[in-house]
Length: 110
Image (cartoon, rainbow, N blue to C red; front, top):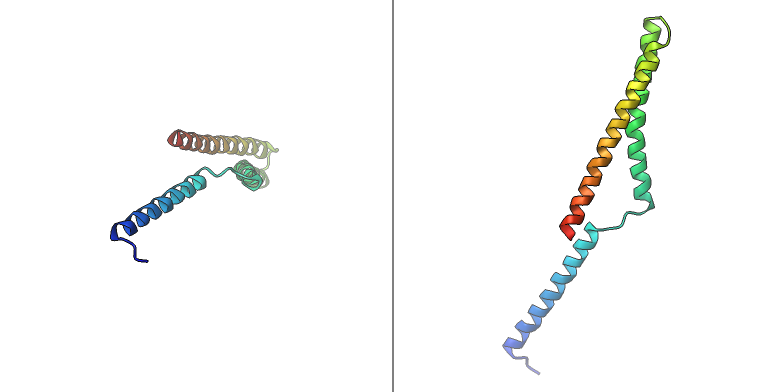
């Protein structure tokens, strides 16, 4: 059986539309993937390290200053608190930036 020339082009156009629609759905699903448990744990880990690293660096610098310049534990406590404050501000900034990106992505999809 021989197909008419116009019939083939209609089939190809329909196939192209189906492929395009499937590709669009796949891309949208990848952009809007629901985060899993591991993603949440990873986020908590990043935020935790954003606080822990400056705190430990401040405490280490304070201990070094207290050993080399005796006179109490004032440097250790002061730099421990400064590191903790800096870490919390860093984590707050990072989380607010991620929240803004999520909100913008939701607005784009709507």
